[in-house]
Structures are given as C-alpha cells and as structure tokens.
Length: 328
Ligand SMILES: C[S@@+](CC[C@H](N)C(=O)[O-])C[C@H]1O[C@@H](n2cnc3c(N)ncnc32)[C@H](O)[C@@H]1O
Image (cartoon, rainbow, N blue to C red; front, side, top):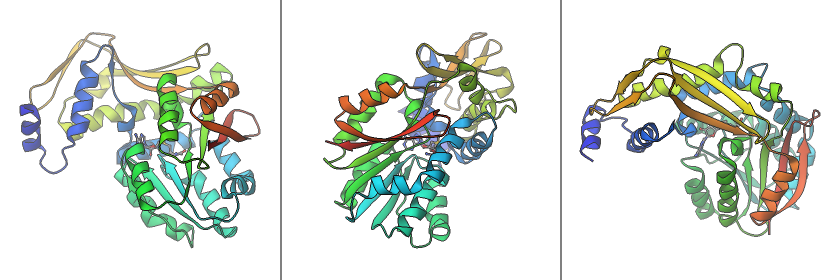
C-alpha cells in the first residue's frame, strides 16, 4: 500500500495500480511470468498489426479468408430470423475481419448494434471514431475494459439476443484449463438462444506453427520486448531490453506454443519504490501461450460448458476454424 502511494506520487497522471500489482506479482512468481493482456498499449497495438501482416503469421489470413469468402453464410447463421440482436466482439482489436461481417449484416438489413469490447482504450476510441465512417449505417457502442465486466455491462444496456464474437484465436492465449473456465463463464453470462463464434487455431505442421511465433523479421520479438519497455515507461522500471533474448517453442503433443524472454546475464531490475527483481543468468519470463486445438477438442469445449455446436467455418487449408455454438 505504501509502495502504491509512493508510485502514485511519482506517476500522478496515468499510474495504473492493477498493472503494477500484476507485474510485481508475476515477476515474483516461480517461474516469472507477465500477463499477455498487457501487451496491448498503443505501441503493442501497432506491433500486433505488423505481426498480422507478417508472412509467417497465417492465422489472420485464414480467418480473414473465412470472413471474406463465407460472409453471407456467417450472416445467415448469426441473424436467426429478423429479431434485433447485439453483436458483441471480445478483444476486437482493429476489427478488420469483423468489418466484412458488419457490412454484410447492414446489407441484409439486420437490426443490430455492434458492441466491441477491448481492454485497450486506444482500440476502443479508434473503433468508435472510424467504424461509423467505414461502415455507413452501423450502430456502435465501444466498451473499454475486461471481457466479462464489459459483457455484464452489455447485458445491462439491452435485453436483445446476444451474439458474441471471440476471434483471432484469442482463446488460445490461455492454458487449456483456463480456456474451459472461460467458456463456462461465457455461458453463465448468456441466456439460452444466445450465440458465440469462437476462432480456434487448429493443430497442424509444427514448423508452420513455430514460424508464426518466431518471424524472421523479429517483430514478435519486439512485441514481447515492448511489454518490458511499457513497464519502464509506465511503472518507471529499468529493464535493459538488450539483455533479454526472445525464445519461442511449440510442443505438438500438447498443442502449446509458448514464448519466453530469457535473461542473458545475472541482473537486477528496480522500480521507483525500491522493489527489486533479481534475474539469474538464463532465467526466463514466460510471456505468452498460443494453444492449438483439434476439432474434437473444440466440440468437447462447447458441450461441457452448456453450448450446442451449430456450425464450423474453415479456411481453405483447414488450418483454422470459427466455431459457432448456441447457449442451451
Ligand atoms: C490478439 S488481438 C486480436 C484482435 C482481433 N480479435 C483479431 O482477431 O484480429 C487481442 C485483442 O484483445 C484485447 N484483450 C486482450 N485481453 C483482454 C481482456 N482480458 N479484456 C479485454 N480485451 C482484451 C487486446 O487489447 C487486443 O486488442
């Protein structure tokens, strides 16, 4: 508490106490880790855009192909007759893929409001400002905050049927057990008849997967290092990012792709309140998981969390699936 007051005095304008607590707790854990949701400050958003444009990062192309080439089929499954509905997108990012769906729904004269949810205020202010111009006729209400807090807020705003998009294989950014809990929590926040569309990256050739998280231009490395830079910028720490090496690995048995930052030397990182984090040489920070699934696993997820699988949309290579489930 004393430490927090001290930090607030140093950073009166933009000090994010929860960020500080999560960072210190993560770096004091064994093994050290950082929460991937903090990757996305304005700089992280930009780097993620570059990752999505990388040759090796196939995920965006696969899901983009689904949203471009199967738009009418997606609209049909989502609209379910003519009743008004709320289209909620969890972790909307730049909404490039969903924009194809939004345009088609407007063309089909669907009666809906788009509620993008994102923890990044930069993302939400940009979407609120730009989408009404690029998608004329769109009703939009961006919600900045955590997934479930904002989902509850969306339920308070209207009683319309909900259709929740959770794309970009964001569900893969949690260990399997957490992803199961996430689906259960999602179900608890919905009513029977509500719908979810979840993008899962499917298991495939391990080399293809690993390359996506270890691109030759080093953008993924910069994306990871940016979180250390963000901690320096916003929390006044003194990470020397040149002394950390980015390491990515994929285990085809478990389907887990993980990335780490490995300390190249023994060192101490300090925070303005005097907090010190010690690194041994070769000690790592676990930064991110990108879990890959089999199609059967996605079906099991639906059934065990109270959803009925109703449709699967695949890209032409069969590398990615947008699974549509209805709450029972
Ligand atoms: C990997 S990007 C994906 C963006 C988009 N869905 C896509 O498919 O291209 C993840 C987005 O989720 C947001 N995000 C991550 N964790 C979040 C959380 N716990 N609550 C709300 N938004 C979150 C990030 O800010 C980021 O914009």
